[in-house]
Image 1 (cartoon, rainbow, N blue to C red):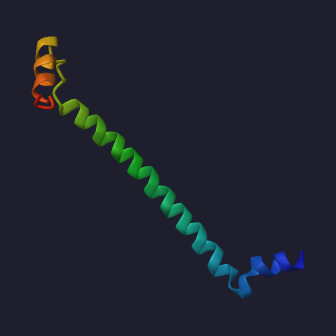
Image 2: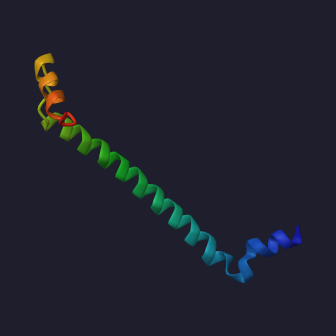
Length: 72
């Protein structure tokens, strides 16, 4: 148990190291949450602004298939 205490003590700098780790984890967690919320909001805005897609008719898809042939 003494070696674990020594490691956790960080050579006497534990009072500075552990709070720095905690702040870094909290900061990165906050950035992750804010980013995911922003992406969801922007995706919803994009979906709202984007016109609905119309499905091609069967004749249009057949004509498109014929233009991409091998040339034979």
